[in-house]
Image 1 (cartoon, one colour):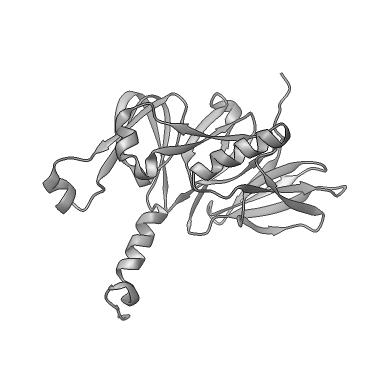
Image 2 (spheres, one colour):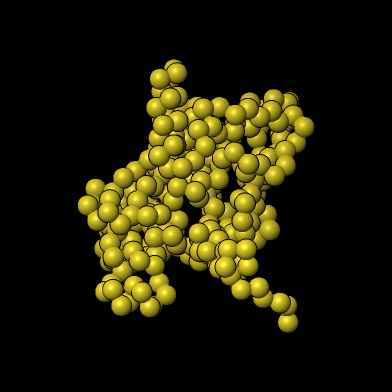
Length: 248
């Protein structure tokens, strides 16, 4: 079967903190609004409702509604090479971290990721949402309840805060802070529940809930989710009650 997604090339820059996508004439990459860092002169960009795979206005509205549930913008930016030679576009996230390239064709055509981790993908990648079937995830999900589903047979790029760790599960169970979960393959079953007893939740300094991942597949974990970094910054901000700290 012929590949449906555009076959883009790429290069990771700055120890994986940015990605430069190379487009042949007519190729397109879709990205979150504000992710573009630079682009060559023959690259045209346009904000569109949805990922381009929806048929008609009704399909676009349905796709936009799914993105609203994840807290993302209704629109994605489409970058197309309208020149006669190769053109490049650079993408990066709004905070330090690591860009992870994933060839969806090598993992069964589907990837589940945190709602704010998607950076860009080759046109033809379909974006949706995934809900856990477990009741616990509905009550305690927080950051980990609504996940984005990426489907297709091309390249997708997601962003992780801080360092990125890959875990291979072969029937065992992994417990992860919900904010630290970046992505997982479709073969992973996940549930979300309370981290422990009341004393542990109040005084251990860990999150209130944990994601329990089991099955066979791959899980990617980040060391510094944006929510954790933002909480730390706010805690030290004098305007919101934090303590002003001088430099040593």
